[in-house]
Image (tube, rainbow, N blue to C red; front, side, top):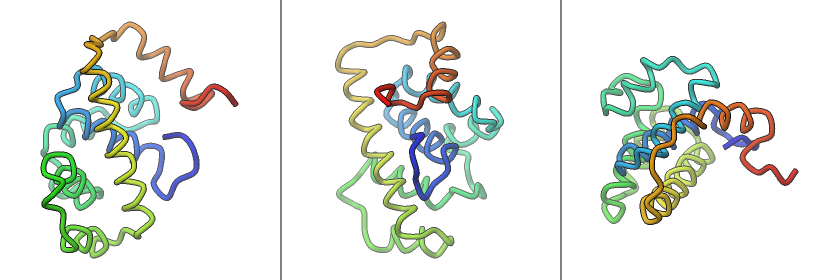
Length: 139
């Protein structure tokens, strides 16, 4: 979420938070909400998006696609992708959104499957470290 992409860091974090909230993963929703706020996105915007009240948001078509991909992936059609393109997004931006959505569907299941609970005390520290070093601290 911090490496080069056709979508901004803020957009990718918003998609991750949105996906996690759709899945009911409180840990990932909460932690990524803190991470996206640390990138300067207003909390009001985040709350509107994760409450499914994003009509008119610049990412509306992508969020609609991500929602369908998360909730009913077998119902995705070319029409869904075309609505993203009609909104002005490129194929590369849609691919990046799909990758974030897919990754967080996986991560949410890992977190939930292991019973990881919310730990809001560490989220601000984690956001600071991630913004400084990225998600992959090997480099």
